[in-house]
Amino acid sequence: MTAPTCALVIGASGGLGGALAQALRARRPPETVLMLSRRDDGLDITDEQSVVAAVGGLLPAGVRLDTVIDATGILDVDGERPEKAFKEVRAEHMARSFAVNALGPALLLKHLVPQLAADNRAVFVSLSARIGSIGDNRLGGWVSYRASKAALNQILRCAAIEAGRSHPDVIIAALHPGTVETALTRRYARGRYTATPEVAAGQLLDVIDTLSPEDSGGFFDFEGKPIEW
Ligand SMILES: NC(=O)c1ccc[n+]([C@@H]2O[C@H](COP(=O)([O-])OP(=O)(O)OC[C@H]3O[C@@H](n4cnc5c(N)ncnc54)[C@H](OP(=O)(O)O)[C@@H]3O)[C@@H](O)[C@H]2O)c1
Image 1 (cartoon, rainbow, N blue to C red):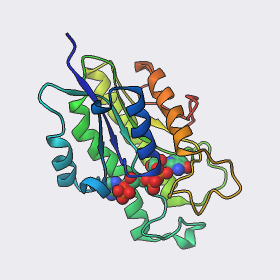
Image 2: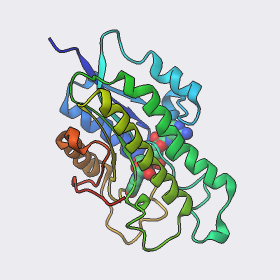
Image 3: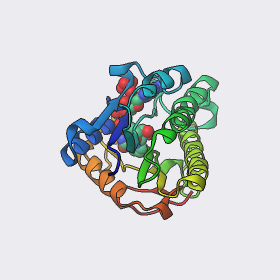
């Protein structure tokens, strides 16, 4: 008999995280979908003690995780907009972007990959952004956000390689959700097609369902198409 499993959405207080948790609960027994967030649980992903406290006793004995969706992230930093040019680069802004968008997911990987159901297919995805693609960068700007998402992608790739050595059925990937109507995009998406969080969540779950171990370490959009690094 296979061991019971749960899914976990981190950043469930966010626009995409909330919709992803709701969509997962519609697709599987709702009691098998766990949620964590800073707002509701005090989880600060940039603080390792906070991560350990939140994920340490999360699972009942014998239960493993089959799906982890990290939907945390920031674009503005404490209300401050992303940089349009290098003259606007500020140390605190960039450091905070890296702390939340790169260090935080690294700490989540450190403490959650060991809790994945490694004897079966199990998935850990983080919401990255196409704008973190170096090859796709033709406009510049938004230096801290772009660079911190590029760092996130590299962190996920490292984790995928390491996990794949011992657990070939574990899939770790970066996903781009598209432009989605949430608090994060409110000031920036004007005039662009913007999906609702519900539509984006359905698309992302479909992509997660189709990922195979060969995709581990990859970067995919909301239709499952690979994105260049
Ligand atoms: N929306 C888009 O169009 C779009 C496009 C490309 C990529 N993305 C990516 O998708 C992800 C989710 O974005 P969203 O649009 O859903 O944004 P959102 O509504 O602003 O949600 C962001 C989430 O991140 C959490 N968070 C921020 N700092 C945190 C910290 N230090 N510790 C723990 N949680 C923290 C927030 O928690 P609290 O609310 O509890 O503070 C919230 O749950 C982000 O990584 C974003 O870069 C979004």
